[in-house]
Length: 410
Image 1 (tube, rainbow, N blue to C red):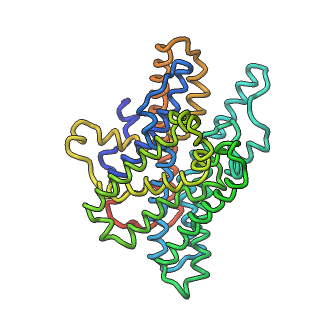
Image 2: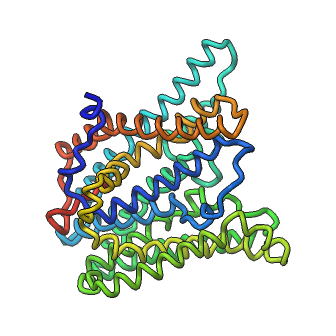
Image 3: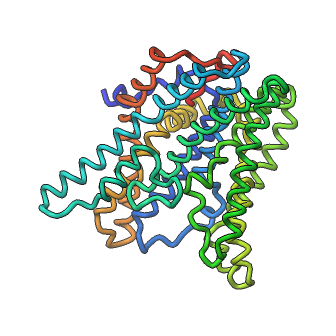
């Protein structure tokens, strides 16, 4: 009975296994980082943590690759970009992301109100104006996110990217279709967003003293509108240059280069090396790097992984035999629910309320945290996220896929 309750029929799902690996790795990195909160002062750090890529940035690139591919294929199939294409794109994206988000956000607010009512103390919620901003995805539009449901900074960036990318493509189409091909219009759209956002960050970085630090640029919508565009650039190459994309030798070389650059970017920006920057007088240069160049470097390095991972269509037989493939696909499927549930609803609201009185207690809390994340995320996906996502198939036109066995969760 329990097996049926938590089963997601992963064995029958038609998916791209390499992309499932990327999605699973991304969410596991994110949840692992939040799990260390349970250890409190007993957490001494692990060097290998500093070599891990930024899980959120990996999500951005993967999301850009998937939704960028959908947008490009839709544009090319219809051979125009009109209001119907735009609205259908938004309908499908928002059916995928908004219901789960609003359910969890509203649940957190209601739980805080009930706790305050039962204790007779004021609730710890921000004021109504700030809460409304969360429902409109402007909680971190031009400044860093408030200390409430803070992990949603990345979702706000992604939602605004879903708005700006097709709008810019629509504008470029209307402006240039009589002069340029659709391929060139797609490319100029991607480059316009990447170059425009990087110029904005550069100008801002130069205007504000380096002594003020990184300014939280990583989590502000206005400074991160290019976040998914590096994945969209990969989707552009896949669609318009399929021979190069499918070249196994080239894929392998790009994978090696991408992995090396991703690990290097992770290490050079990690907290373990900050003391070195300060000791040799490079801290202002590091701050400038983290405000500007870091973002395209990490985005492009991760985009280099896409050809190889997209070409990894099925799991090795040994992985299937020992259940590894099924576990990876399961984690991939519930990754969005894990993202929404792990930090504020589970860690902050439940697990972190248990005092960490020793290292042993800390590790017990870590184990409880992981168990709750996996169980509750599976249930949320199976009984809410999946049914709502399936509902969009009846309310919107299905978007074209490049291969019959390609499963895109965009």
